[in-house]
Length: 238
Image 1: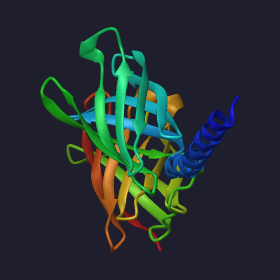
Image 2: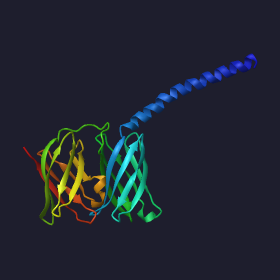
Image 3: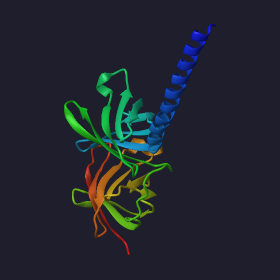
Image 4: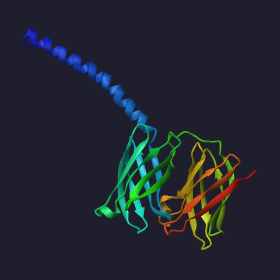
């Protein structure tokens, strides 16, 4: 190799090394921005008065993998991604296009998820939350013991208590038929409450969406996979 060729090679390596060193931190920063969304999420798909499906998804470095189960007891894989600002896109993998779901939403810093999807030209909603320990913003202003009840057609169906700690809660709801709804939930920083069944009980399809007011009162609606929509209310106990 002559001196001219060697000199050109040295310049090329120097320029390549410079831009490589500049690019790597930028790339790592993007990964770090996505890591705050890492965790396991429980998602409910609500359309009209019915909880159409429940899903458990895993977010890792912005990539989404999981499983959704619909009211027909059919299970499908779910893939998708989350962007740096929390924008989320989900798509179920199904051979039948009539059963597939393509959803869009937002993952917030407190670990709650809201979004929408379409079924037969109807706009439907999705609600969810992260139920594993991750880098979520901790919400404590709604912590305490609450007495809650489910009401349908003016009749009280179930009543139970939840203890919210660090914006989260886990409990079992006994039914009149001696079944247990094993549920958990999360409170967003603006007081929105999302509650649904855990993955092991997803076939029961119970989802509650509401809000906690400044006076400690709780209001919202609940949905089941059998189309039994009702009211959800309660109060914070002293």
